[in-house]
Image (cartoon, rainbow over all chains, first blue to last red; front, side, top):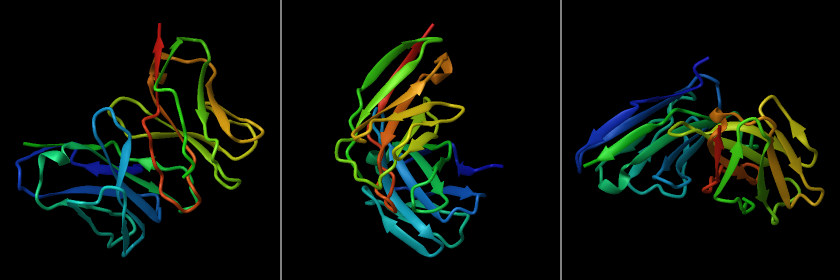
Length: 113
Length: 109
């Protein structure tokens, strides 16, 4: 049982480049989330999705886009990378929105130079 | 979400019980208390949750006060591998999960 899988684990981007962080879950969870975590800080919600075709903004959505075409996948897109987007990104999923156990991926460490 | 307050750091000797406190004085009647932990550089891991009654699982015990304004997570026999940041969260139903800075627990030999 893979749970939540994120790729890549590490990435270095140049300012202005774009990339997609991949997230997939095999638990048939309806809800999926993207967080970022800056050094020494808690997790901040970027975007979330309550099901295929439905997404909504979290606390810090600027500079990011998401899509949810399938239940399994929830990619996060950075269009014009900026140094402020240097962070560790975590994807998570829950079965429902009535808060149940959240499963997290192992993270993507992104550096923008 | 109900605001939660946790000490920024705690120490514990290996083999002893680690008692991590959390204040959530504004919690409403239908909000659960959840505990997660994050071991260095890894994704957060669910530990336990509860509403009113005390809860226990293979990882920890959760003690919630009768007025529900505070709770304590207990790791009965802490090991070095329990060194992590522990997050106490009280989300509203059908809301997203919000993480604060948590408590950094350092377990020492």
